[in-house]
Image (cartoon, rainbow, N blue to C red; front, side, top):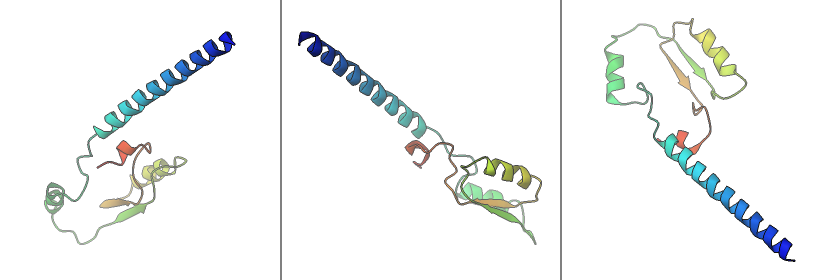
Length: 107
């Protein structure tokens, strides 16, 4: 019976240590993900709008609309093709993140 109790105690200690380690890892990941900045040309900010007006008026423009960037390398193949097109801009309907962590969705 003593051996069972000591084995059980050791098991509880191991599980507790694992859970505490996992909690620390989770905290570190969430913290590091929340520290990542946004791309330079992200959003509808005044400096972005000004950069568009500095280009001058155009009579024609072209754009692409793409879905989510995650998948079986479909987005990468599509981008390879679109690089050769004279696009004015691209609309991305997905969330445009590499991993689906909360930090990638906090703005």
